[in-house]
Image 1 (cartoon, rainbow, N blue to C red):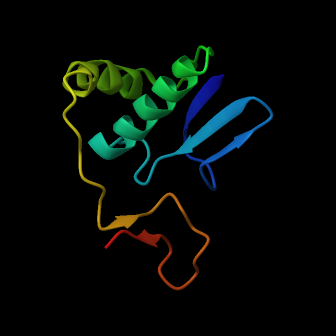
Image 2: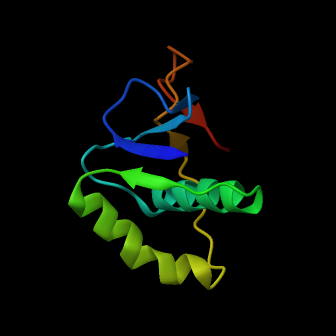
Length: 96
């Protein structure tokens, strides 16, 4: 599975590509990194490999965070997930 991380309208999986929208592109949060690594783990558990396409700065941030992730340390979700824009009222999903 190809993972493209960038400035997209939404996060979606389409035609063998996982498009990961960042809430504040080109910055990537620990929560967003965790969701990418969760996706990679899911794919691996189901016998599939992943390749990431992103700016070098984003790939470096993922690589730096991987050790923390591999230790089982989890990040709490933000109060609002801004990559989801289905709700015009909040322009994101509230996670309370």
